[in-house]
Image 1 (cartoon, rainbow, N blue to C red):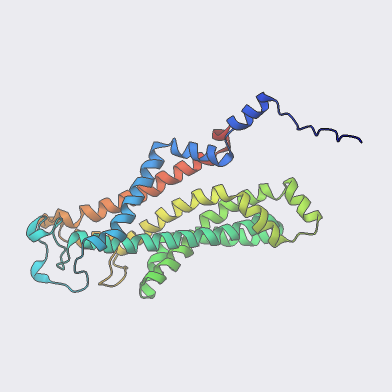
Image 2: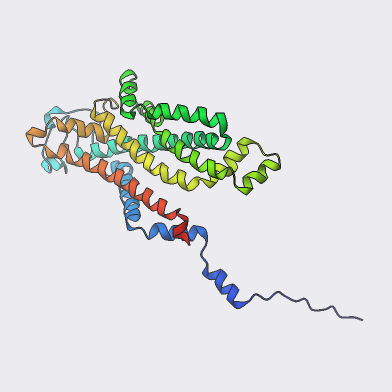
Length: 304
């Protein structure tokens, strides 16, 4: 009767085990770099506060934002319970800022995401296929870049009645050019990598290369650019509203509030100007701070 030989378990060197535990994951290192950026954390806090103010605020601070009351127009801050006074149409200023914040943030987020999505696919296709496809697509991009974005926005918004959906499409139609050029440059570099060449040799097509290899490996550039696109889209909404091409009342955005307040500058009604102006500056700064932090977090040299 023979006894079974005892099974031996592999022994890991203590030094290697400690090194494996000490080496943080890529996601952890990326998060550490982002959280180490104080401005990026400030941007996250500012954005969270603005979102809470715009979407949770109306549930706690209920005001009339549909019907005008000219008898209560331009009341100074603190009058009759109005913390920041009233607008030129009699709306409570705090409540109006909340409603306008929803419009500005929704249009900015939707337009920025849509522009980034289309520009990413457009640039990835152009850079991966190269040749005459790249030449034709980039000539279209160059021609569009030659026309000032504000000129196109004003012309289109003047022809079509502005609405939330229209503004999203119009702003996205002029904002996709920047992500397209950035991703195209990434695609030109990534298409020559070994894993892409191996995928080609195994019979993979262009669609698989673009959506499975090019776009995922350019995701750092895409995410960073998306934050800047959202900030630019919010500014575009404000520009158009300042020119009188905003969503018709009773809807509002921060740009239209600022435009209406400028009319009363000589009367000293500062509360019609400063709150919406400060809100625009804060939300744009928040997205730019977050974008800078993400750019550092995705930077390979900072993750060593």
